[in-house]
Length: 151
Ligand SMILES: [Zn+2]
Image 1 (cartoon, rainbow, N blue to C red):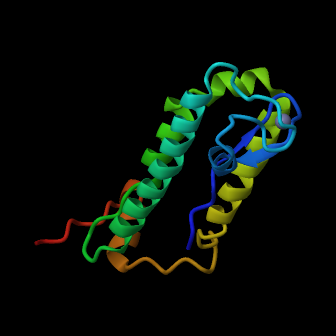
Image 2: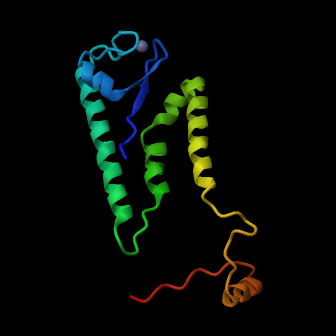
Image 3: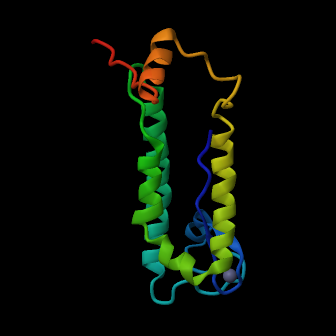
């Protein structure tokens, strides 16, 4: 399955475009309105756009490969997503652009809802716990942690 291309928005015309479109044109202009996107920084824009697209393909490929390895490794998705949420610095841009913030929140909620549908329903669909877990839950009021598997 191909990786979804990274999108950006032109702050002048408000239209969205893919980073690869800017790279393909090599002029540093908005693919929609034709205005220069970053005056005096076109080379840096083209370089960073290429780096981001390549890095995304590498990251997704490596995580997909790790996910498919046999054995007992389960990469924690939130540790990858946290870096994208907190380390890139998008918060500052989103504070200054409430329209973009609303649109991004809507997309993120849509993605989160798809994951929430993966969770078994609280009643009925969950497997019945064994007698030991029921006893531990009754004694402690909490679910016990699964016992580590011997190597
Ligand atoms: Zn534009």
